[in-house]
Length: 478
Image 1 (tube, rainbow, N blue to C red):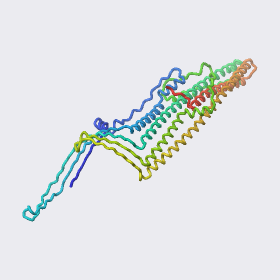
Image 2 (image 1 turned 180 degrees about the vertical axis):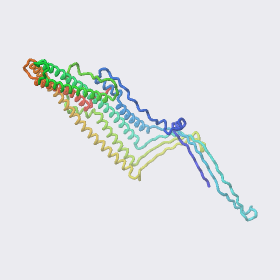
Image 3 (image 1 turned 60 degrees about the vertical axis):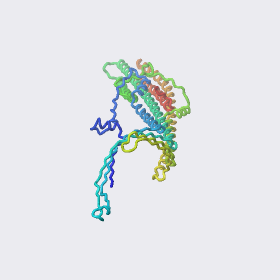
Image 4 (image 1 turned 90 degrees about the vertical axis):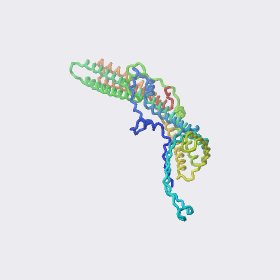
C-alpha cells in the first residue's frame, strides 16, 4: 500500500507576510488599518462676508463635498475594474510542496524449485519504506480573454454610465448646497434688518415717551399717555430681543450651511447703504414658466443622473439575458515555470473555446433576468417621478418669485403711507391736537409696514435663488 501526504504553501500575499514579521502580536493587517478621524479645521472668516465668499468657503472646507467626491472616486475605480477585462493579466506565484510517500506490507515470493527443503515455498518479507520529498515551483501566468459574447462591453458601458451618474450627482449636490448657502445668507440679512426695524421702533417709542412726559402738567404724575407710551416701549424692547436672538440663530444656520467650524463673527455684506430698510431689488429678466420647465428638464443634474441610471439598468438587463442563454467565450493562457523542483520546467500555452448554457441552476439565471427587468422598470418609474417633481418645483418657485415682486411693490406703497401717517400723528400730538393712542398706533403700523417690506425684499432673493436652482441654472464655482 502507498500513502501520500502533501502540504502546500501557495501565493501568500506579501503584505500579509510583512505584517506577520513586523507585527507578530498584531491580529490585524496593517494594510487595512483604520484611518484617524479627521479633526474639524477652524475656518477664518473675512471681516465682511459676501455671498460669493460663503460659496467659496463651502466648497473649500465643507465635508459634504468630500462625501460626493468619494462616491465619484468609487465609480471611477469601478470603471477601471471594468476596463481591465480588455487587457491581459500577468500573475506570478511560488508554491512550496512537501510530499511523503509510505510503502508498507509484506512482499511474498513463492518458488518451489529453488526452495529448501524442496517443494516448500520460501517467503521473503519486505520492510516498510517511507520517502520524503519537498520542493518549490515558480510560475508566471499570462491570461487574456479574447471573446465573451459582449459581456465586457456591457459591463464597461454600465461602469461609464455609473461614473457619469456619480459626476452629475456631485454637481447636483453642489448646486443644492449653493442654494442652501444663498438662502441662509439672505435669511441672516433679513434677521439683521428686522433687528434694525426693532431698534428703530424702540428709539421712536422712547421719543414718544419723552414727548408724553414733556406734555405732563405736573412732574411725577403718571398720566394715561405716559402709561401707554411705557407699554408701547416695553413691547418694542421685547420684539428687539426676539429679533436679536433670531439673528444669532440664523448666523449659526449660515455657518452650518457652509459646513465649517469657526470662532469668528459672521458679518454678511448688506444690500447697500441704508439705515433701516434695504433698497428694492431689480427684478431679473423674466421668462415664462414653460421656459423654466424646459430649462429644468435639460439642465437639472439629478434628472440627468437618473437618466444615466436608466441606461445602466437597461445594460444590466442585456447582461443578465446573455448569462441566462448560450454564452461563448475564448481565453488564451500562457504558463512559464522557470523553477520546478518536483516536475519538469518550461512553458505551455492553452487556447480555450467555451460554449455554456445553464441547463439546471435552480432558477438562478431566470431570477437574475427578472430582477434586472424589475430594476429597469423601477429606474424608468423613478425618472418619471423625479421629472414630475421637478416640474412642480419649478412652478412653485416661479409663482413664489412672481408673488414676491408684487409684494415688494405693494409693501413700498404701504411703507410710504405709514411713514407719512406716523409723521402726521406725531406732529399733531406734539402740537396738542392728537392723542397718544393715535401716535402709538401710527408707530406700530410703521413698524409693521417696515417688517413687511423687509420680508418681501428677502423673499424675492430667496425665491429667485430657488427658481435658479429648480431650473438647474446655478453655476458651480470653478
